[in-house]
Image (cartoon, helix red, strand yellow):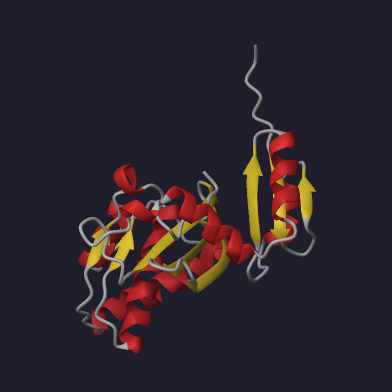
Length: 214
């Protein structure tokens, strides 16, 4: 029996909302749309259930509820997680594909910053930008608190102030590479006291900044 790779795409926030049968249709609704929210599902039943259950609730509340389910309050203790911190994560649909990233408050899961989708990037580039964005944000706020990321690669790039990507720069991904240039320049010209810590997904569940698209 051949494997069914069919997917259904739910768009909660975009030019048009609803369930779309192809990525091309979904892409038209979310690309370059600020604050776009979407996710793929393997079956139409899952997609319909997700769209109907989330249709009357704000996106932020849904994200908070999802993350709270994954990260139980029992694990939010000083011995395991530093609550006074922020978490960052990126999402990439395709490889390369559409990339976005965000940062949230670890304790409240409130979204602090969010970069809208960018074309033809990689998850590692998104994770790298998320960390640097977080560092710049905390510097402006004069906050000496840590940043959690679940990407060892991105953490290494930030600490070494150098990226190692095989992605070729061209007109389709100029936006993300321009941001990478600015991030590298920021790292070269700024110091920061904040620790960059690896989120322990195995023990703690998905990082609170996760987009929930796995």
